[in-house]
Image (cartoon, rainbow, N blue to C red; front, side, top):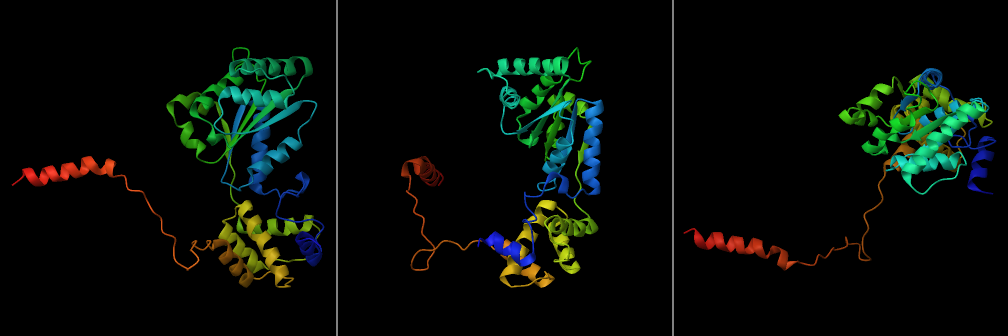
Length: 310
């Protein structure tokens, strides 16, 4: 029996909670989650670009999953790109691949072909593409400036593409650059995901267990409060702590998770690996080859000062 099966059998779980096995319609929708989806829908209906931001683990990806899952496939087609140090041509190439359109070699040719494809989808099929760029803070400033080339149609009188920029809060610093003023003004609808409240964190933990087949309370109220305190309400951090707690509870054959167990798990999560030592228990010595040539001018300078100032 695998370790996962052992945990599932111990608690009566149908699948593992606090991970990626939760279906899109099983996601816990907090007040901030619902507001983020509402902002995206408002943007889809009225503007050509929006910004969704939040801390690492705040649930941005789940918001995007839920939002795109509920789109009419006959009216919209979404393209997801995880950003890196891409030029605008690379983004265009990846978008064309997602749309199953032949990709030219050159970046400028790819950009023009993507623009033509966007127009064609709207005119001939009545489909508006959605371009989602995740981790947008990682894009070079020059690429962010060039995003306007994907949004200008009919002398900027038509909305043929809906652009969702998603990333961490550091993107706001970039948007303050003078060269990004036009993009900053274009992002009239923007939303920053909030952490879960204490009450929402408790509901979130119970919801995760419930959708995985366990109705009874496994986490005590005090344990939930401790998890909230250490996670600061960030769902990704809650997931990591709770997952470790389930493993520890099985190892200790405990059906209820109490604060004392949380302290042990948190200590293990904070523990750093031991410093490597040699077979005698001593720290390894690091030998550096001396470069006498590089120090020669310095030594000459010292000698000169000592021998010229009497």
